Amino acid sequence: MLSWMAWTWPTALLFVGIFSAMGVLTVLEIRHPGGDERKGALGLVTTRGDRLFLTLLGSAYIFLAWLGIFGTPLWIPLGIAICWGTFCFWKA
Image (cartoon, rainbow, N blue to C red):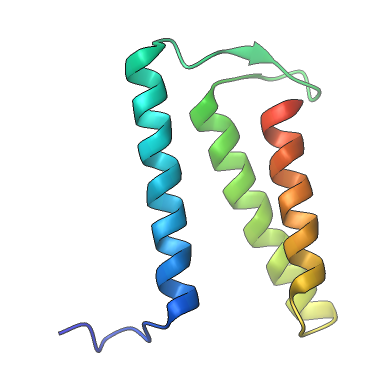
């Protein structure tokens, strides 16, 4: 049924994590409407959803750049991506 994609545990966990983050943001939006807008370090007014999008997009670029330049292992870009996500939700 799902043979069109190589479903591995890391792939499944990635999708579970993304959909869980979207679920948390949905609950936060229902409890506190308005998206928690604020002006960040880059001078942009962002909402929680914008910050999640920037985190996911930036993390994808971090991993792709690391794979293109250094290859594996991927523990270092994971740490960089976590720092990037923290920066996006804290300062962006």
